[in-house]
Length: 239
Image: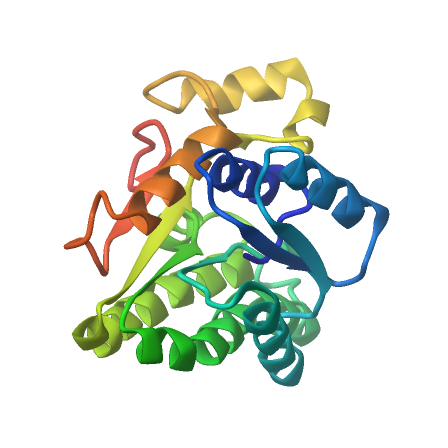
């Protein structure tokens, strides 16, 4: 999986390991955070390894997948979670801001899917879970670049689901809404209360709730589910 050192990605890696899955994950560098996550996963009794890779770089993504296949033998599940934000109103957004977010968020999904598809095609099965966002469904103020990248992931995933279905490779999208992570811990209580008041369930989601949805979509519990866009958002409007 990509982007597993913090937040939702970390929760996804831990949840998969708790379910008994071996976990190969990556980050831009072999950081202290990566080493810590690797140790945390190994302590759960599974095989785990972190790799340094910029997954939005086509050549690096190809090399990463080859290394994982050499180390683990095969890959049954790919979770594409890597992503960034660089928020601004459209009237102030620069071309660089647009390009950077699209390249990282959507480009990484293309690069990793392209890299893993031949191996999954040969083995005749696989599950790809892409992490979108409710912002990619409903849009959001000052996030046109982020919304476009996440909407692109939805369209890309639906197309891949159709192309890969004949080889029993499923492709689905999980779209988190307002999720409680390390970043939201710094949000003032008044602002947090305002945000939560707009959610029918009146609370933020947890990273593990997103992770559980990923495990379900990746697992054999839903062998006939593909091309699904699943909001994890507590009933947010327009999601």
